[in-house]
View 1 (cartoon, rainbow, N blue to C red):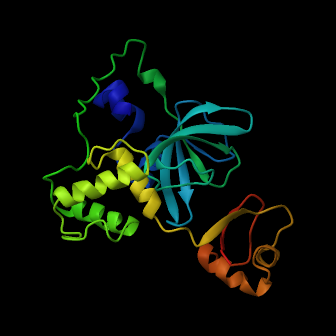
View 2: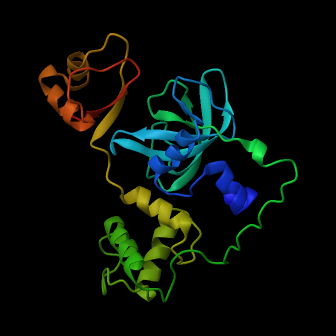
Length: 258
């Protein structure tokens, strides 16, 4: 996005090293003393927001801030979903919002836009092919993965060849059937809209619910209230990677579903 708006050289000045590994991205701001930890300062529109993933045990998601109020930060994120919780692999681009105190937030990369100046010509938008995604005639691992998902949706949709890694007439018919059922454009092309819907439909339901710790909660009390038995609290510790019983107000816990 930064390259599209400002070109490669200015994007490097704004972000530092280009990387798809979020800990490295946040470190570029930390090295320049331009990183605001949650609760240590207020972000501004245009800043890069970094999220801490308890599942990964590190910073594991990123977005951009487009608005800030007295208590809330508003973001645009890729590879997420519209759920109110932190989603680090959702397959979509969404506008979201969080309390400034949310424990999902690790901090913000404060972008110094003064280096841009007033006369910036945006880089040309990349050419978009008329058809994106997989289509009739394609083959390989990506096709095989798509076919496996289609079989999760309907085990009978590829009766002759199964997941063979070849996008032929049978696979095209299966894609069309899926698109028709979910009211997508029926073109037999495994485009972004079809992929997002298929991944979402076939993703397993989480085995936990999310709970925000309230004032006065203990781990034992939380387990008793949510699971009906405080004796199950070791499950909560294991699921959240806790090494002690210490929890704090506002902390987000994964609670095993009963």
